[in-house]
Image (cartoon, rainbow over all chains, first blue to last red; front, side, top):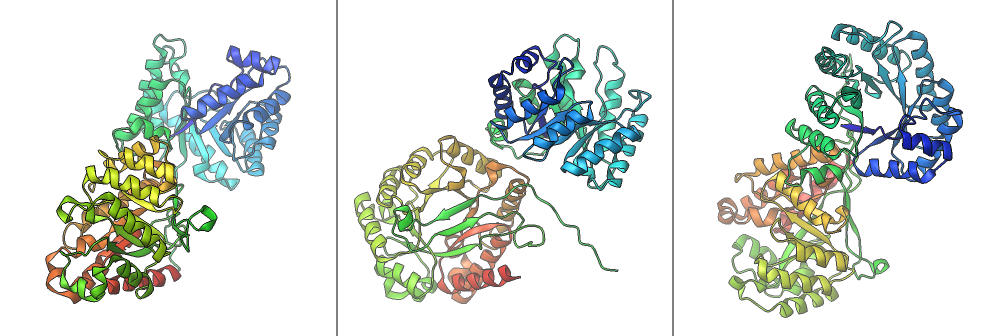
Length: 262
Length: 311
């Protein structure tokens, strides 16, 4: 599993404040803590309150790269903000994200090609978030086909079926899980399947429990990456155990430690 | 139509372990042997690289090996009575690139010589031969804890590989290796889960994973070799997929296993072939260091490695 740490996001109050006051150490600690907890990449999002997202993205990327060299997932809806981040990334980055709209895909895949990045593709389009597995698959196939037109390998695409909160769209859980299973059959080599996990528990009680239960079920269905809170130790432990049960890692008594040494 | 072969791509690699400390490292060895570093299954050069050739070394004891079959004894001759002569013959006449020294004389069943006597031998060995050394205890855990600690000190900076550490007895030896700059052999009883666990236990004590080699336990051709093969293959595939706690090179004690089976004891020519065949199979399952006993088998195996590495 490729764990992408979600905590450097201007939606969170501490990060919003850190961005506003340029508190480098806050961001750097968040980066280091997430990597130490097992994140293989870090999501970077200036948040909706940033007055100057281009500058803020530049500052975030520079600050993070001073303390870690893991991949960065440059997360923005604005092309110029994404490009600002990509210009500075030292290692292969991930663009978060495109959807299945033709125009958006064209611009994102051009950037991906130019900066040799991987791309997260959300299975939505102008008509919104699909409510069936079939529609999600159709959009996923559109994204993979378009990526290939740009010479981007399927394994560099992370298909995101879009997890919805269980208290709002309860019927969508199973659609999402089945979509993940089917995404893996879209091409060979297979594209990655990713979820933005925390959305599953948005507005619910027992958020951590909902998140980790969903994650284990998704892993069992073939999930290969997730954007999540790696500091939730029980969540990470559940994921590690799930991969163990699926024979993706070799058992030993210290399997939790072993995973974190990877 | 040309056939397009399916090729695997791996993300992980085997650690590179160094054997032998030259004057640059404060040691007195004449060479450094690099082991491991593979990014592919053995000899699949189209799928990845094997930057370091697997290496063969002969095994010596620190006393006369009374229980060896005649086929082995005759090849080495009178030198067997004098371990220093024996060592020199292995290096000079048989071209062994490193030596595996088994300090067996300290074992209660082998005379129970004092640790200090064994260390005195080791010190003169360091003077007389200059190839890198793998040093193995006598096999009695209690004796080895003292013996190997002293052996480690006596060979400080020679960058030896010391063994053997197990899941139940690894702390003393790991501490010695840490202090004196050696690497360690971590053993497991043909069990990939325990192999991984021992590696974690040792690295948790602060020893760099690049200073661990795995002994998966060897079995001879006809005596369970296939099971060892499958365990090694599983560990190596996991290493190539990125499992850092199984990414250590393998050491295989081929000679020890082969020369105790009936076929080798009954017929020397068959024993030699048996040792070569076992070694060749272990190379194909990922062996990096082969410890062998019959010079002819060792030389044939080295030649086989040279040939296959050129392809």
